[in-house]
Image (cartoon, rainbow, N blue to C red; front, top):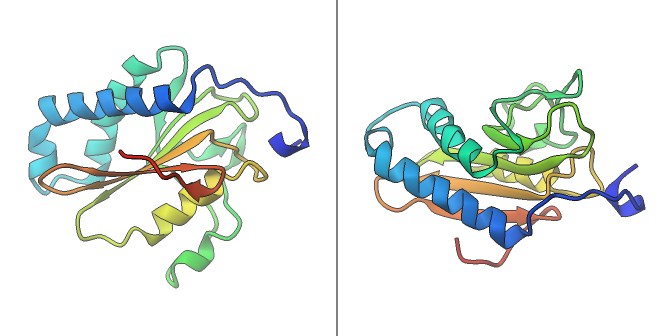
Amino acid sequence: MSLSEGANVSYDYPDDEIRERARIALGVLQKNDSFLLENEVNERAIAHKFAEYLQKQFPDWNVDCEYNRMGTELKELEGIRECNGHRQTSRVFPDIIVHQRNQEKRNLLVIELKKNGLDPRCDIKKLQLFTNMDGSYCYFLGLFIQFDKSQPKLRWFKDGKQMDCEN
């Protein structure tokens, strides 16, 4: 049953609180791990450290990197192949998710990270599909973070669309 069909799912936090907790975790990352952000460190290393700080902000939720399952099934997004001519599959590995493992539709936040200069189109498409409340995953919010050597740029997603809010 999709949320639009009447499923009653509580996400524990209003979206402004989720955004604030994510900003706090990002601030800790910037303070404690600036080396990762200022040097040519792989995106996965940045995601791992950010996930550690997110876990402290969401202690009753699971925070996982590159989690590729929905229950026991592989995580796939219909329509993601079209975002890039080189994509061979609809399987996806979100950079970071805040969810409750093996609990249907208990998906709080999905995050995609991108280092400066890399094409974000597929990440943006993933966030649109993951946050679509008529879709299979129904993440309450999505966050895209574009890292460069200065201030990261944040874009928030809800209901399959980019939100009009400041970081």
